[in-house]
Length: 339
Image 1 (cartoon, rainbow, N blue to C red):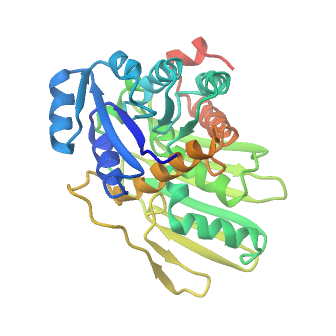
Image 2 (image 1 turned 120 degrees about the vertical axis):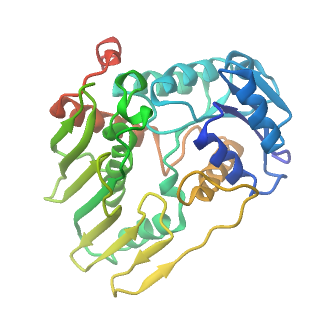
């Protein structure tokens, strides 16, 4: 494909800002952001002006119908992912959807099925897996450098208890969906994508019935254990330690690592380029890696990424459902979209 991949952006919030800002560090011959949509036209126009995007739309229908868009990045709140994903796929758009892909496994299965039926690319935006340190770690595990993987210990927490998207059930809140997607995927990544045999979890919920803190263990075939902790009540270490029979590796800021402590305790440092605007979140320039993965897949005619496959996303959704059930977090969509 000689022409650039043309992106449409669904939602003009903070993560969409960071995504577009990161895409701006890639060659314009490969990527162009051509349109943005938000619920309020004013928000879309302001976003378009800041980022130099030519078209701004009120509402998502117009974005879906725009014939000059190849792929849509969905950066809306959790509970809007399914509906927006369906809308874009029905209008022939490839989709990169922020995590969690949907609120539960039932929605996720339906979205994946629709993408397959429409012959369109769909990926959950688990950007972590495209960072150089993740790719290196995967290769090293596969080569047996860490020996047999026995344990992953990962924790992810910030003081977020007053943040609406995390606090409110009506927005698909809770740490399992917002932070747990990262800790779960880390464990699965280290154990080669195998499904755990059992998941055991406990947690703390708020008055809304949304989880604010969760501890879970995933027990893998062969005796490996993934231990994860998420919290919206306190700052945690936010590291992932992968322990094998021959040594362990630690990823710092594990969801977007620029620092790795190796088996010999040496620290390896990675860097990211500078972008036009400041970012809202840690190391967000790394969103460029997943954008380029999407382009390469679409150019090659692949409907999913080998690094975040549909099977991966459905497994993550199933584990999230199991944890929520054990902790006592129920969404109205759970009955409506039963598996």
